[in-house]
Image (tube, rainbow, N blue to C red; front, side, top):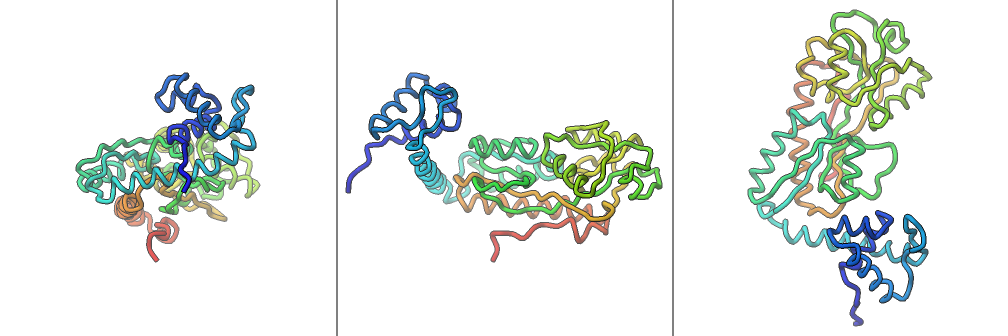
Length: 325
């Protein structure tokens, strides 16, 4: 059998150059000097006898030959990384590092308990827990800055990530509890209160606006927030209303008595939260984290919310577990 003369470091550098568009960017991510990264790329191209990038363009463009080579390189490195993690994590107690990012809705009720359970089962592991918006979590996964992320499923297919469906989180109205206004009047802009929107930079904010357009509803756009806490505070003060979800309402627990949740009038809709990985994680580790999350979401989010709002029982639910037949 003919042995390959290609270096693993060469392959990693060419992948980084393709992603960042420059040798400088690849060097920064790899923790190398620019001259060392450039040397690795030049050695690889010399060994293959082809140019993988158009070095005259900024950012550097992948050549047709480079596109073919990268397709196989990406797959080969993915398999190697997964093999490395599998070998190190065959026994979960031997796991050394784990980085997770969760949406802010899980920050108070789910994340601390998840950390406690995982720490008990993986005593030798160093954990890094982040709280980010969904679009940031997906970007962190693609850049391999985290191992596991819990995020809202975006509109477009995430074929480069592995998805484990977690939660159906329906959209509802959150309105001042002291007012007896019909749900239809809020949607028809007859309540006298403004709609407090989620930021259009967030997946959830985009989903809400898309549904309003489908219903041909045009509501004045006066207030837009990135923070659920800010929105719920304003609703609790009686200065507006919003379209949100039970998990968002759950996180703003201190405002619960001043806010009423009511069904979205007419055709309902929901966001879907999933556990995402970048396929470089040991299967048994993903299964362990996913199953723990499912138990916590049921006991800390769904059950308490349904107890207070029984009408949510059929629509605020865990999604089928892909790990079960």
